[in-house]
Image (cartoon, one colour):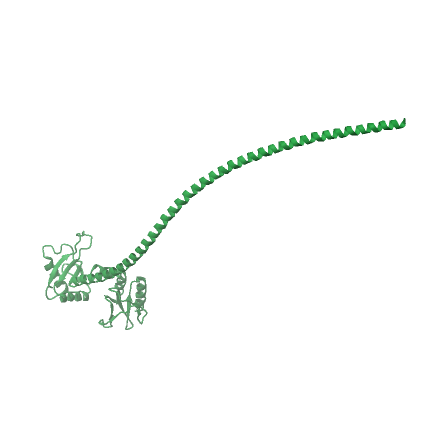
Length: 333
């Protein structure tokens, strides 16, 4: 009996084991089918993703290609424009360089021509100045004759008689022309116009100047105080006017003799005679330390008697230097 029960228990155990195995197999089978379904779904999803990614990639690639193509075309057009402008600028620069070289050569040539013309003009101006001065060499300018003194008389006869009576000449000088300066007649409170006369003989003109220089003052029979000057050109007058202030100082110094000189000094001795004319040399200094300059009508010579010694001072364009030294030398007299 005990053995039959054991057999029955063993049979039940075996049956139970067979049922469990069957259930396990069923579960495994169900699990496999489920995994296959999941794998299939994953594969489908993967395929969809790959397809969509391919589509997006293709569309983006096409879009990028179109944009790159447009950009290339724009860049190509811009580069062509820049190249064209650069070429134009290069051509212009080259033409300007060529023109600049040509102009530089022309300017050099013109500069040489201008310098030559300046030299020619200087020579011609000097010649013209010399000719004008020579044409005036017999002329005299007389100031101080009141207006209308010559009324009712010929200017030639009037001035010839005035010079004879004022200077004490033996005869009337021979005059070719006589007239007042060509400007508007001044008022009663203004200085009268000067007379300009032309002597027929140069010697008579020089004699008139010498007599006028020796006289301290010239008073006509009518009571006019006159002065007699050479008829200088405008250029010489401007050069002489540069020393007007210096000459005023010299006139105010008693015992001082001075004169304008052309390119040389006049040395005045104690007896008042004019000695040998010493030519000036440019930048040469005298024994008193004053610089001599050879300029046309640009030198004033002053002679100061100082303890029986004659001091010659050359006055140049530096008026302050001139005044200081004149007054200094004059105080020592």
